[in-house]
Each structure stands twice: as C-alpha cells, then as structure tokens.
Image (cartoon, rainbow, N blue to C red):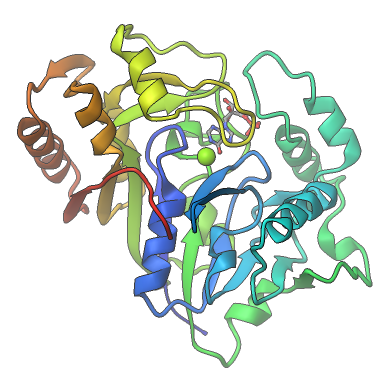
Length: 337
Ligand code: IMP
Ligand code: MG
C-alpha cells in the first residue's frame, strides 16, 4: 500500500535538471520505489557520478540508488534501446542492484515506430519513436510488454504495478517525470509538444491515487532552453554565451538547445496547474558566470541587475502568484550524486 508519493516534474521545456532533484531527494528520503511515469527514450537525464557523466533515457534515474526502479504504465519503451541503454551503463561500471520493473501495460516502441520517426522534421522530435508509439497506443492497435510471456532479458522484469504498490508492503514512491509541462500534449504549445502527460495527470494515471500525493517538486532553470523547430520570441546576444557556459546541448540528440530568459509566465502557469509545493530553480551559477540577470514576466523582459534582485524577484513572484507553492530554492549546476 502506498504511504505517500512525491512527484518531480519539469515546469519549462525539459532539461531543467530533474534528475539531480530526484537523486538528492532519494538520498534524503525513505523512498522504496522510483517510477518513471511518462515518455520513453526521448528523455535524457544527465547524471554526474565519480567524475563520469552518464545519461539515462527510459531507465529511471533512481536505478543507481537503493530503491526499486519502475517504468510505469504511462511510458513507451523500445526493448532494443532499453537494452542498449542498460549495456552502456554497465560497460561504464554502473550496475544497479535491482532488476528494473516494467509494468505490463507499458506500450512498445517498435522498429517501425523508430523508423517512422527517424526522419521527422516538422516539429523536431528526438527521433526516438515516441509519437508513433503513442499514436498506435491510442488507436488500440499496439503491443505492450504484457503481450509477451517469458521475457528473459536478465536486467528487467515485467510486473503489475497494481500488485507492486497496492499490496501488503508499505511503499513510499518517488514519481520521476520526463520532459515538462511546456511540452505536455495538452498544456504545451501544440504542435510543438511531446505525446505524453508530463504533469500530475500522468502521475495519477500510473496508479497513484490523488490523495497519496504529498509534495510536488517543480523544477526550472535560471534561463530557459528548448529543442525543436519553434523559435523563441526574444533574441539576445547573450543566449549563445549561456549555451556555451551552461553546456546546453541535447542529452539524447546532441542538438544545440535554443536559449531564452526564464519565462515566469510559463513557470507560474505550470506550477498552478500542478499544485506545485516546492520550486527548484537550477543553474543560477551559469547566469552568474555570464553576468546577466534577466527574466520574462507578463511577456516583458525584466532586467534585474544583480543576483540578489534576481533571486528576490523570482522567489516573490512565484510565492505571490502560486497559492500552493510554499518554498522556492535557488540551486546550481548538477554535481556528483
Ligand atoms: P518527441 O518527444 O521526441 O516526440 O519530441 C517532441 C518535442 O519534445 C521536441 O521538441 C523534442 O525536442 C522535445 N523533447 C522530447 N523529450 C525531451 C526531453 O527530454 N528534453 C527536452 N526536450 C524534449
Ligand atoms: Mg533532458
């Protein structure tokens, strides 16, 4: 039975540093499980560990910690890419202690889905078969992990999340989001969106009853980044510098990320829509290195001059605008987990 679940979601366009927040919460808390609840191999969490930089895609970032990792029913997974991702971690010396549980309802990204997405150009997907797999899921003609008996891949096990989380054992679950509300299928800037529910709707749909949700951690970055074909409205020569210093290149595709100032209008909307209790603003050190303190509010660029003013403005705006948010934390670039 679930004692409670905490949730980590992105408030902007992904790549806010959710992996770092998940890892530090897992270290501090008494969590028993860490579940990825949306998306597939389009996600990319960067993990810094022992001087190595690792990426996880479909595998929950909690895999390297002492919790049971689960890929939840809201996800889509390619068995081939999953195996490659796992092999890559193991080759580099990182083997989790537990098998990865995959819910039997998880839909399969097939070779055809990957092939179809491989030359997508209109919205600039990550080309990992995400859209075609969700399309076929909703057309009710797709295969799921439970469609096969006797998977025997050693490192994962097909389970029923209901039995795992709603049985006798008391569970504390970390719900690890991928992408972000700005890319949500319904609440993002359609059609420049991913194909899954990146907020609380996605969490609940993965078998987590609403009233078991304790904290919702919304993650943002001190400036925004986005990958895809949409163009940000505001231009500024400093964006190139932020990209270089912040190393803003896609974890999954290596593409340069488009950079913009932190859009508080989007952040506030995402936080309100998902009853966010804590906001974490990552990579403030990058703005400091570049020496620019700007944000967008009410569609205007606000020039805040100093770090102190920036921190105060961001914090006060969020606390004033979002009723459920009680804490705003400023944080730096990810370091070792
Ligand atoms: P898809 O999810 O691969 O179909 O891509 C749809 C849109 O979401 C594209 O603009 C992608 O660049 C973006 N996207 C998908 N996953 C991520 C992510 O993990 N981080 C950042 N952008 C993403
Ligand atoms: Mg990412």
